[in-house]
Image 1 (cartoon, rainbow, N blue to C red):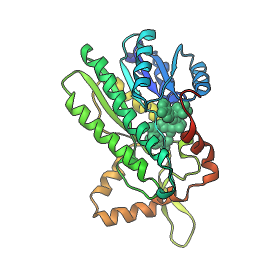
Image 2: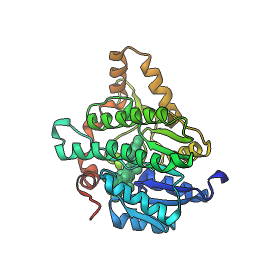
Image 3: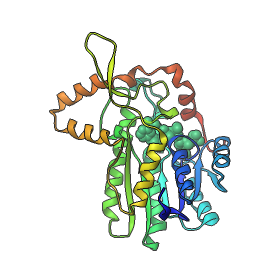
Image 4: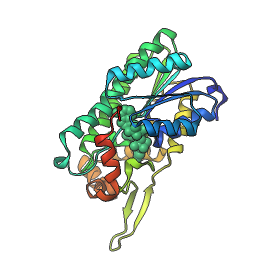
Length: 291
Ligand code: NDP
């Protein structure tokens, strides 16, 4: 764990579980002062206890006022923010026409608006100091298109392009802006989904795994390495092979790339186990910052 991060002030959205929790823990292990924000207050308190954090606050990233209040509270409690990790996100899967319009809006507001607003507020705070790092947790799903994931694919594509444009616009300010692109990560977000990229063996039901899901700690270590490098990183894939896979696919004619994708597991979201996803689906449809 890099010692250079000791004493840094780090705010993590969605730090109460999954990848955000692992990122928060990794920064703590580096000696950073960490603050987390999320919707579900009970989960937030329990995560803050586990991580021994003094600073945590209810946050709805889809509400610009809530985001500003969160960052103000963190600054008042810990000092000027050195790192903002825009991690909060939700992922509905299943047939597009069965997706409730409210959930579609909520996904856009959380995954896109939340990231844009968070990046803007962080830049306002960091540019006058001439330093800081905004880390945006995007997804390889923003560089591909799969049945059953249209809204999420669109949101993560927007998040990637937004982060690229913001990085270029503010490249001379001393503030770093980085894009992290995980593949499948073992959290509740992929409950009931087979997120492994795998080659089917003809005539059998067996598949040879090509890209396995990774653990939240793997993403956290990539974030730590990125911030410790003290430079903007436009593409950090976790695992790295996912980036190579997407790069190779872009060299293929579109029809071949798409059909390969579907054969390697790209249809899985359409056939997600709805029972196994019920808790998650319920959480992302109903949780609000006031309980
Ligand atoms: P989890 O569902 O485990 O955690 C999501 C976190 O985001 C929770 O803390 C949740 O808080 C918080 N959150 C959701 N909506 C809001 C909101 N409106 N305001 C504030 N906090 C919110 O998901 P993951 O850890 O898997 O995902 C984290 C990020 O990583 C997401 O952006 C996701 O798209 C991305 N990602 C995930 C991958 C995966 O396979 N798991 C792969 C690639 C990217 P609460 O519990 O209070 O709702």
